[in-house]
Image 1 (tube, protein in one colour):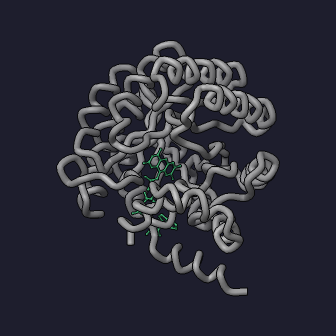
Image 2 (cartoon, helix red, strand yellow; image 1 turned 60 degrees about the horizontal axis):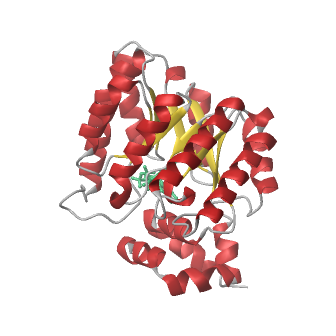
Image 3 (cartoon, protein in one colour; image 1 turned 60 degrees about the vertical axis):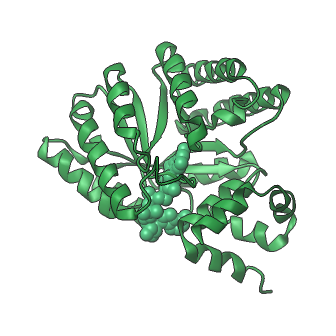
Length: 303
Ligand code: FDA
């Protein structure tokens, strides 16, 4: 099921047709409050009332012309302006800013955005896409972070290389959002079994935690896996850390009850709110994560 969903995420015919189907539009609402920025802002206001922060992401990836990439930067600048009271952060895919077309232009776009985020006292996260982009995304992050400390990078625990990437980033006082990984990657470069991915996730946290305790590194646990979060917390407790020093990010609409419970337990919790009409590939990755979501989507076919 996971492979089928991830294959479908790349299929051009499905990408062109599925977003027009009413049942798919109904199903996607489970993971995003709406396609427009106002819906995303309203969701963030509701989060704020519950003590949960917001990270906005404008959906889209693999843009094929630089005018489009520049328009996306304008859109993010609008998000920063309109969410100023919410102390929200933003999260961006490098290929949404033109990495496929021209890496230098993508770099300039990311720098422009990091500068705008700094001016708005916000924070810019760089998403991690498929493994074809890992090296270039880390290079992009290093260049942007050298000028703008208010930037972070997402790293994926399923990749074998990530321990080396964390080790090379640590001396530069990075911000790392650690995820398990959402793409289809071969066994030569990525752990396949949940058990192995979870073990690597914990090993990576153990590697970074002493620097987190010294406030040299900002580490965000971007996972819905509350068992993993609990085990990472035990590393923190052993180092004498407080729960308020541990940051957790989850996606809008997933395990909201746990987001609230973790907040009550003292963790810093933020929800990633996606919006925009380019939701197809992103939504298919959400379906791949949990087969029960496919059944939910199919149920939307019923009147
Ligand atoms: P796992 O898949 O083991 O799930 C643990 C439990 O969480 C499941 O048993 C289920 O109960 C629940 N759950 C997980 N996914 C669910 C879903 N879709 N629907 C309903 N319940 C679900 N990936 C990437 O490659 N690059 C990136 O930049 C990002 N960015 C990112 C930001 C944030 C804030 C989050 C939370 C996640 C990402 N991801 C990502 C996605 C990530 O790699 C991963 O695919 C998902 O988080 C699912 O894995 P979990 O860590 O939740 O664990």
